[in-house]
Length: 79
Image (cartoon, rainbow, N blue to C red; front, side):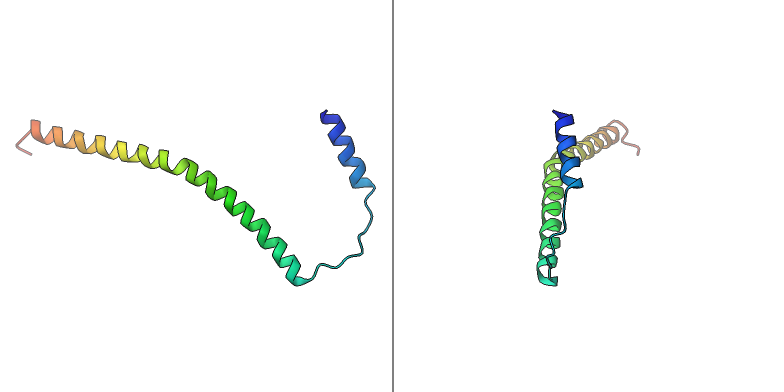
């Protein structure tokens, strides 16, 4: 299957012809912005998917550190 995809891709790249078309600045900028929007959407969705577990992990670490400091100060009142 992989060889079939590679060979069909190679053939389609070798047999391409010029389109003799013009992409004006407005349509070209639109295409660029759409591509950047898609990339940004994918990046933000991945970031938001991992952000909350990471945030929760750091919050737990901070709470453990605070509990340890509190327990340490209760055991040693001279400090």
